[in-house]
Image: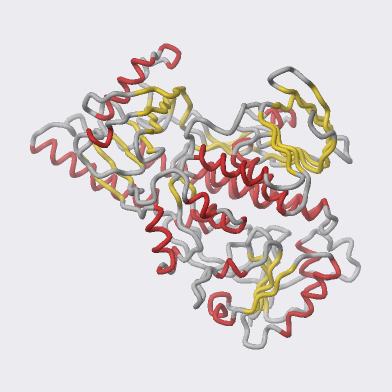
Length: 564
């Protein structure tokens, strides 16, 4: 039997649910996670961990463990576009291996000034590591093989019904809050009566409509294909279009192809699945099917609300992507990061319940933004059709290959060099941000301009001793002091944090002043700039506003940032 009471019950053991368990457990909050699957994912699913997600894994202390998962350290993470994998290579977008990413990160600046670079790893490996990390934490109970069957919001708690899949044992758990991270067919969302909004059923020549996924073992693939290895392989011909990520850098692949109008997923046999794979390769190769199934591309959906009462939604339960740009899983992780510290602050009595209203206010606009970017990338790839003679050994065929190669090279840069998408998400207008009257740079997918305007990711820099500025931040709140005499002036924030029971780390980094353009910056637990100014005198008002206590703190006045 599971515990009968908990602070947070999490329905769903994918990236969002597991990341939330880690965020809560690190803050001493009890949580029970249930998922009807027997374990974490077997199928590869998402394959790209963006740099911002890696920065959050670094904040939690296990980015290095994640970076050692999946591909060998020296395996190229290029994206290769071919007519067929063993035929003509059309274009290649080169990216660093895991080893090169660790070496290169210290020399990067501008858009890619970051504590971590992206990592190409199957979600199945990430989920397993997130589970291992969560299970280490006191107060966290991870339970695969248990499903949530219903719930009732009682006003002061949520009564949640769960059932053991193996033997039908049923139990009711009382939780202060329920979080539905239970995927696109979310029972939690359904019971709340909330609907997706946006676009679905988008038809494209590729990445729009019914797709067929094959998890395959192909031991001879790299001996058969004459081109250098790549992490992502995209084939582009009139017969069979597909994308395929390498899972282990040796013999396992996650293959996805668009079904033709006459192909019915329920009729496909193992042999036909092998033939699909072989058609994409272009030469006979032995294929072992590990698993297979269909899914639908062409979604760009976001739920109308992310919260109702004491019940919250995150991940695929509130936003559904066509998986171009690798944005679905990474957006789900950031949902958990955002919600985790807020739930903990309210449960501990540090913040008012109104703080929880900022979860939807902050994350729903990001869901709309990121699904729109994913659709843009899917249109770019899926609406560009291969010419009928692109495989011909003729001058006309060569000309078509050159044309397609130029287009796909540009597309690769647009889809896979996206620091603006990765780092540029902002929470402008949120009550948990204190604006200072400055305007952030425009949002652009392929360019990120670091800014300390409150509401976004803190500008990053490497310090003289080789440490990341982010490694100086505290796990909870950080007051970054950048002025030459800023340290002594921080006492107002220190006193106010002590009065409220807030864990605040004060960090003095004068060399960051040019980046932050103020003597002080307050960094939230999710590493977002909450406030900046040249005087700490409004500390009480700043915390009151951010924590949703402005109406209950009799001495609090509207907070403002002050920029010299």
